[in-house]
Length: 72
Image 1 (cartoon, one colour):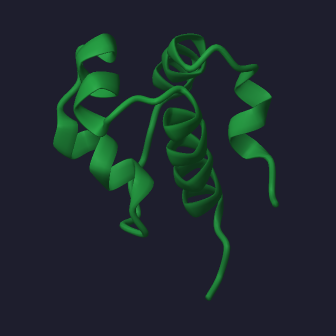
Image 2: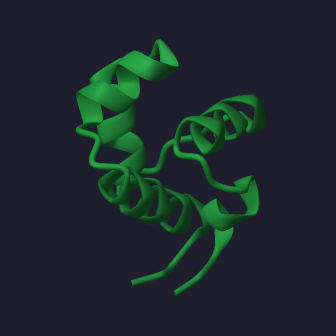
């Protein structure tokens, strides 16, 4: 399976969300986004996302935005 940037970002959002003990709904509420949007980001479904939204996610998760792009 190809590890494209959307899969990497999605996996990292999920990882840091869980480390912060947040459900998808809780993260969505903090970001004023829908729970289904967060679920799509974390899934293997190709989903575009703006840099502004990535920045907001990183702030809520208390991480540097570059952590969302880390391959592991």
